[in-house]
Image (cartoon, rainbow, N blue to C red; front, side):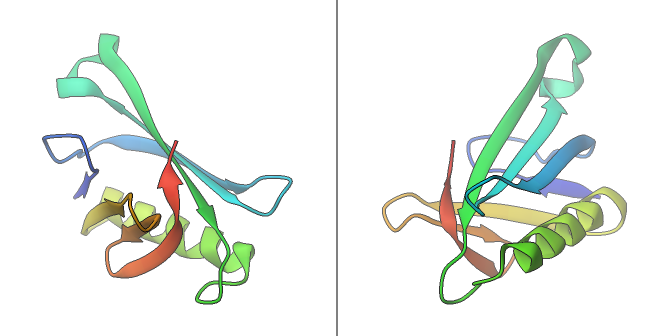
Amino acid sequence: MSLKIPGVGNKIEEYQYCVAKDNENAVCVIIKYDKSGNLAQRVQKAFEIRPDTRWPDPDIIVEILKYLLDQGLIRKNVKIREDKARMYIWFDDNQFTGNSI
């Protein structure tokens, strides 16, 4: 279906992603897509998600984010939102501590 990312005007229907823990147990999310459907304009958006009291286990964070991003590719419209002032990232209704990088 699609993915909506902050700072990107249109919904993204085709994308690739990588979700993995780094060596400090933060979760790195990288989403690559073609700007305006143009293969020559490949861009990426990256987020860093950190465990907190709501989501203390980075392995669970990885599982949830992979699931949601997979859903955006096959059957669901997934929306990512960012509250920079509070350093929160939402993947649909799931709130995480983090920021775009």
